[in-house]
Amino acid sequence: MKQSQYFIPTLKELPSEAQIISHSLMLKAGLVRQLAAGVFSFLPLGFRVLNKIINIIREEMNKIGGQEFLLPALNPIEIWEQTGRVAAMGDVMFHLKNREGLVLAPTHEEIITFHAKQHIKSYRDMPQIWYQIQTKFRNEPRPKSGVLRGRQFIMKDSYSLDTSWEGLDISYEKHAEAYKNIFNRCGINFFVVGASSGAMGGSKSQEFMVESDSGEDTCAISDSGYAANIEVATSNVVPVGRIDEELQIEKFPTPNAKTINDLIEQFNFPEERCAKSVVYIVDGEPVLIFMRGNDELNESKLQSIFKTNSFRPAVSEELIKYTGADHGSIGPINLKSNIKIYADLLLKDANGLVSGANEDGYHYKNIDFTRDVKIHGYYDFRVVKAGEPCPINGSPLRIVKAIELGHIFKLGTKYSEALGATFLDKEGKEYPIIMGSYGIGVERVLACFIEQHNDENGIIWKHPITPFDVHIISLNENRFPEVKQYSEKLYSDLLNINVEVLYDDRDESAGIKFNDADLIGIPYQIIVGNNNLKNGKIEIKERFSNNRFLIDNNEVIEFITNKLSNEG
Image (cartoon, rainbow, N blue to C red):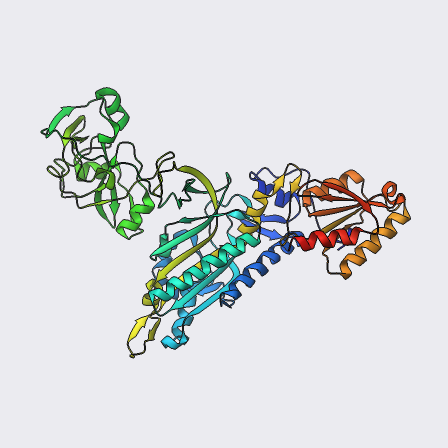
């Protein structure tokens, strides 16, 4: 492609909203343009890369037996209502005002299940892996970070249909391996974490993540190889346990102690012996949860424990109604109402604890959870902290920001039961289809590559997702006919051997051409200048290493083909 005829609107000045590397470089290099908040147009250069990523995804999905579909983005709302996800999605789902009963699909579990119900009747019809690469719509309240969080985006979503849980395990592992192959082929450094299934439901979930300061996810990782989304991460912190002394419970005044830190500073209590209370309204009922010291309650874990999306922190009026006290004075003794009490695992069967007295300005000490309190259940409620020992070998955890590239779920029978998608086994007994769901954000793959492959001058593309293999930069060809003649022939010869070439034949200065070439970031720049050409030489710059080679002008084709063949 000749650059004079190709639409690459590079920028010198960036819009103020471009705050992260990938967003800035995608705008600056002319890959995308923003149309509205969270809505982007892909321009020719960006679309070339996007299609290469899509082709890699398609190849790897086909290798595991995937069959490609194209499902409608417009969905009947009644199908979604059967699974309860209209309410679960809330404002994230786009509803059409001028056509009642239609929504824009944020994903396609319901529609796949609908078609499975129509056509899957027997165990002989499975296993199946159905996938598509299609546009999704989600009404993100705060779209930002360029294509990393948009309202319209391309997703590869696939779905497995199996007759058994063992079959689901096989389909799940096939997808996990396919995802690793996809991201490795795209040149992305990633890690895999255990994750929360959230509104998707299901028994197991993993995310494929890229460590990045631009990420909106938080993960806990360690040198042992442990990695988990902060929503589900655990650590090997030593439980509080019991002290030997059997001390009687004692109420004492704390008029100026409203926080855990106040109790520690004013009364010299060990932080871990202070039982912090939090009250949540879960499915309309109050629940009292005790945490160790200044530990933070993890709402994703709470959601999984109580198996509901309907929960929120209680407000002051509710706290006083149910416990008799406001924030800072709540505890397990003398509650005003019959409220269920739960505690974090680190407090299991602990004694010697300090907590509120359910009376403003007072606390109890020497509380024994086995003697003084009825605990309805101990669970892992807490958010892990940096430096805590990891569950594998005790290596310290690091808390890092990360970008989610892909997510895989074991859905089980949640959707098949809700929509009546069943099959008959060998004995003629009817069972719900066992399902998995697997997604990749296609634009995110592109953005994450840029986040990891750039320098102060621009993007650094690598095979196989580079928009072009070679960038011919012809200098002053209007003044030097021999430069133009050589460049034109080289361009033609490379095309004839199926090398993808961008040929900068524009009437621009050398400085502009070099700056644009580094910004666009094509792996090999072939610089055709009069001075070198007179001496029978051509300069080639390797963008990713910045190495430069001065070679004979009749050896350029061989040099390039050798380089490209080594890249696979």
